[in-house]
Length: 294
Image (cartoon, rainbow, N blue to C red; front, side):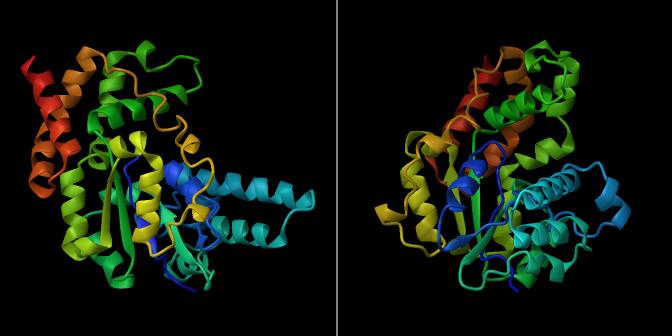
């Protein structure tokens, strides 16, 4: 059993699904079949919670078990069913978490954007257990991220309407939720992880680069986790797989919401530009300031 060799900690709507789907095709990499297992930020649960809890990560575990059971009845793999049952039903502790990465001959990793917002003490606990793990942090203009997340959230409500048809106060309430803001407080999150991991173990990647050249971003990730980035190891559809899962809702943000979001994130963007010297981060800050000035 082993802890993951690398973690992708976020940000949501910044390319993490793209990364998970492409790394899952690598022969030298093992990723759990379920993205976002949320162990490091939600460890202990009671059996009742695992069976009936409403949290998304618990529902996903039950859904995966149901699909695995159906696949097994149709001739699917016993090992896959066994993994799904363990993942869904067994007590969530360090031994359980390590057992989910039992591939000794491959690099193991987890992609979970929720880990970005861990507190300083939580990051310290992670670093104590897995000091050599490499950390991948995808970032995106927080205004775009927040608006894309709102689009996804309100489209899942099942009423057949999108974010633009929702009550503006409900939308702003969602955008200003502490959990939503923490996800995109890049300066705070990066400072917490840098406190316990050296900079050479943290890879920062920007959605702007992913949109313009996903192939290069993918090769950079492979080099960072210690794998060969030769063309033969690059999925043929690595560009197409960026597809539009993260980008399809990045329409221009309406003026009222843009102003609201700029007020929420301009201070964090100021702090981020103290921590990193990057053209994209500088532009995000300049754009937020311009929205507020206007």
